[in-house]
Picture 1 (cartoon, rainbow, N blue to C red):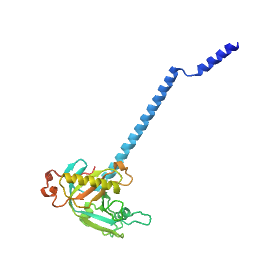
Picture 2: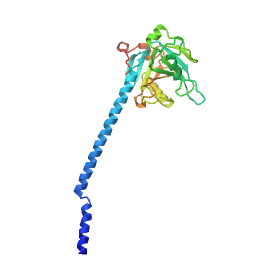
Picture 3: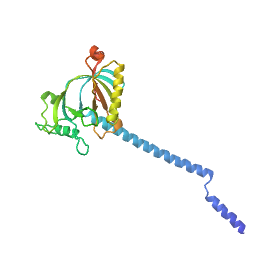
Picture 4: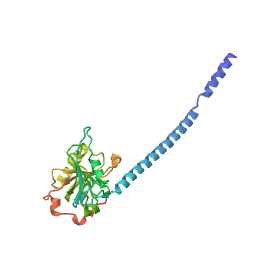
Length: 251
């Protein structure tokens, strides 16, 4: 009897151990749940990404952008012709904590800190001259065409001034990312190498341009480095492709 009980007890334990078929069924169910979860997560991330891109594009498209003509286009490189532009500009001023209030000084100007107390629409791009991240950078907002034509009001804020950005031809490279000194130098080097391959001679200094607000993800930002071409440059002399030039539309 004791032996029979032992056998029966063993059978009870065995009956509680999943069979190979049951294990496979369980694994299949778990895999199914995992796949559905991954599909939901992927779908959510896809919708979130599309939404983020849409917001970034809509925000950028909502601003008037400085006009230019494309003379030559080669991937991320272009030669452009800009008209004269009116800017409100300020030089970097680092505080005791190393913060620069250039953007806010210019934003206050277009928000009404000017002699006419006029609110002026934000535009793109924000131009920066000098080495990004250093104390000798000049930042400028482009005045809307209508405001520039009527005469932009004088600034009230200290260190803010109106100035003209002379038109001309520029070699340009366009790229995403968080614009800092390292990235700006890398892209300027790429641009100068491309210019050399095109026998284009540019000035020693370069400009940076940013088109997006700070909350825009780095991968979706539109940044540019611009180098003014000298009058002796091949592109400037022969004006090739001018007949095919088109007014650029911000994307």
